[in-house]
Amino acid sequence: MAVVSLALFKKHVRADDFADDDEYLQHLLDTAESAVITATNRTQEELAQMGNGHDVPTPIKHAIMMLGAHWYNQRESVSSVQMHAVPDSLQALIKPYRKLTE
Image (cartoon, rainbow, N blue to C red; front, side, top):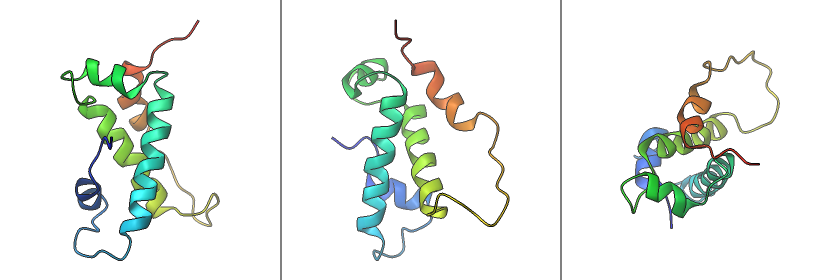
């Protein structure tokens, strides 16, 4: 089950007025969802219980969109331009839902 709809993600990356990148955007969305959920050390079902019982919390959804958007805008692992991370923005969204492992 998708945590974030493709339509919402397309609005987030300002690609909602064309369909040429839909397959690629869905790939990024699926990959970001997997990465963010894995980073919490929880299952999607556990996160849904922490939300409203059937949907993951909004900060997790936003973290998925942020990560997918970063990958959409920066398609390679290296850049000729100096990039600066916004301090703790992605981690600030994920950390409250992270389960500590033993």
